[in-house]
Image (cartoon, rainbow, N blue to C red; front, side, top):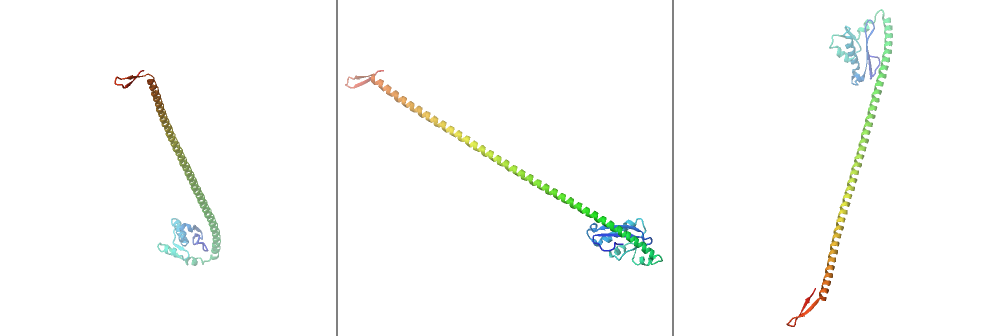
Length: 242
């Protein structure tokens, strides 16, 4: 027997023994258990009830509403499917007592189903809330990790850029220093060459002066000691005396 009324989210199925009116099985499922297809929830509850009761009870007849899926399912088994048998047998001498007992049992069952449904809904809400919180935590953790990775990457890139800039600046300074040293060496070499040329020129000039002075002194001494001789032919010959 399906729960009274229509609910597209939850289906509660109750199995009652016909003569004693005892509840032998109750099951409640959510449409998320059947792939969010609310049409097959009653059939799923019926299948669960049969799987739970058949190992312990010998079921000869099933009385339920005219559900087409359950009707098609029972055609394959050796179980009688009927809807009028329950009404005929209930019209006996103890009809009122059975009806009162059934009403009390239905009230208790309805209250139990409502409480069970409320607990299930609370549990589902709590599970949904837990899943949502876990998902939020995971998303926040992912965002934080992505942010940390981005910041770490930005810091690394900034550090790499700074190191590249420092290396470039060091290289520029080294190149400037090398150029300055080369320039200093060239200037020192030029100065040394200029100095050598100047010294060579000064020495040449000093030597020329010295030679000039020597020639002048030699000529003066030679003139002071010259002796003119007269040849026999009448020409004069100058004789130098040191």
